[in-house]
Length: 384
Ligand SMILES: Cc1cc2nc3c(=O)[nH]c(=O)nc-3n(C[C@H](O)[C@H](O)[C@H](O)COP(=O)(O)OP(=O)(O)OC[C@H]3O[C@@H](n4cnc5c(N)ncnc54)[C@H](O)[C@@H]3O)c2cc1C
Image (cartoon, rainbow, N blue to C red; front, side, top):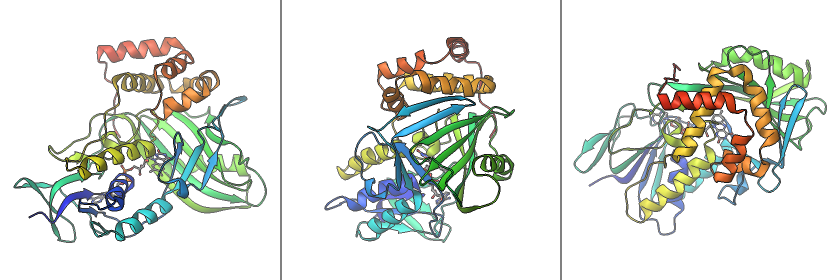
């Protein structure tokens, strides 16, 4: 007899989103356990996304912006997104809420400090999983949200470091989220600052590089100090917290265990061309929980439709081949494409008209060359 119906390996965004839905379902009939390596959650990231529709985490939103901006030197492109504001959810609020909902449920369990080092093993018609703490679990189904132990090759890597800074005077405009403020001195990729001001004195300021290799916090820190100096000046600044990430953009399929549902960032959780994952993970968690609650097996994240996959790959090939043109191309895209359509396109909700508007905003030459190379199968992926 299995210990639980479902074992979820990894209790981050994907694992907790799924477990929370199962725990909160009225009269829940699916027993689930989440095995998470961390022993305590920290405020380690913020999730931003355009709010295209009401969602279950409205109460967790700490800030939102009705305008977003992209800047390349003197050229600025502002998109009005008042109808679909750019929302921010602090991860700690998300983790705490998920912990509460799961702990209040008789059906779900969250085991912190319970890393799972190996692959799940077949056990009759279910699975057997051994955690680091020695506990053995048996389950009918396994959903694995752990990152793969070896990073797959990827067209580009998105590396970033960010600080929530508080200045001693007004330096930010909380009316606008700066998505990309490009640095044209960067020689190893496309570099930009991402600035999310929550008050005139406080903002999350990040330095991001889209490059062929991932960068460590140490490699990013020097560039980031320059970014901070340019925005806030010397002195008079305190740092409330920091975050760092290296996300794949257009990676090769990550290793998967047959019969196990994989649902991490590396298995369809994130959009290839942007790294945005929050709304995609929520859509997957809705579908997967619904399947389990009607007695069906869990479902994997849906693959992107081929036109989106192709557009993303072409776009990433262009940025990899011509990083020096990235700033001008992305600013042009924000300036020329229909704003509402661009937001839908970036949020996986765009239709054919939105895709055409985005395509028309971009210079055709490099994109046609990259499309031709993609069709010929010219390799485009490299190391982590
Ligand atoms: C700093 C940062 C900021 C981001 N900002 C945004 C954003 O603004 N918008 C957006 O859409 N996306 C954003 N992302 C991308 C994406 O949304 C996040 O990375 C998201 O957390 C991915 O969800 P996940 O469940 O795949 O991975 P995670 O949330 O990282 O969850 C994986 C979990 O598995 C656990 N784990 C690892 N190994 C084991 C093991 N052996 N056994 C058990 N547990 C294990 C980890 O501790 C972790 O809790 C951001 C990413 C980072 C790193």
